[in-house]
Length: 159
Image 1 (tube, helix red, strand yellow):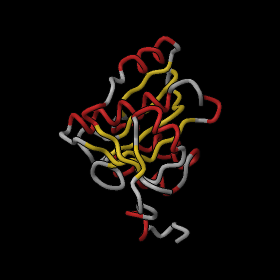
Image 2: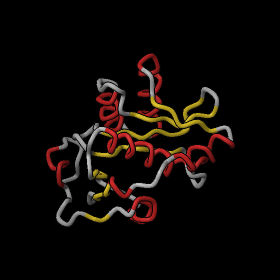
Image 3: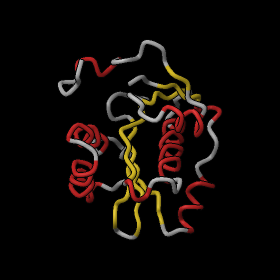
């Protein structure tokens, strides 16, 4: 899967997406250290062991570079940044039953805002699946020749 590039200086605000979700009882929040094991176990159950490893790295960052979508105390989605490499977005996952509500978009925008606030002008979305989603949400463009890219030495890769 290829990587994509996003111009952070053209990024639209996450506030409308986050506020719309709040009206539905869904909160976008930065993960907290006391929730580390619960979050990592959720990611291992709903994503993959590899995604759990990437997310674990996020808990070593200050601030923690992982955002959650929650309904009450229940995790329904997550998004990481600065996990696989600096300036990278991902991994991310929204429960199948919660897709189509704008959660993935809100997590994406909030994470990219955090990268912009850290001083980056561009961000890389690593190993994308839904290319059209990223093109639509943040005008991301494919990076030619980026497969397998940084993931070429990943022990779990198929290459």
